[in-house]
Image (tube, rainbow, N blue to C red; front, side):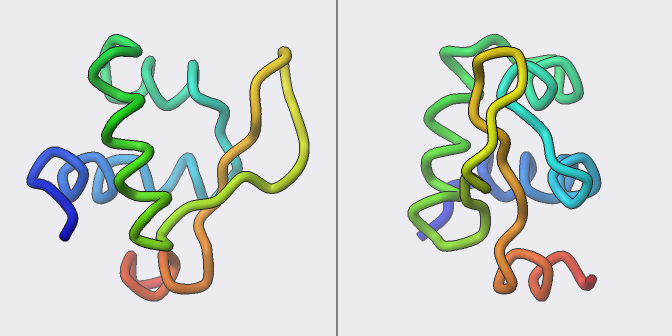
Length: 75
């Protein structure tokens, strides 16, 4: 089950993730520090809503919405 923060984060970050975002961009967009953002990102990943696309930018993995994530975001 996705926690409340993960749900909030998903709703607020689905646009940047649709365009591909790395962790620092997600943190900046949501104004969260890494220790808050990382567990929420992991919850989204475990729920099958986001995934790494295999690319790196600035040394960090790039995250994108999965098909399930796009569907959940209404895309």
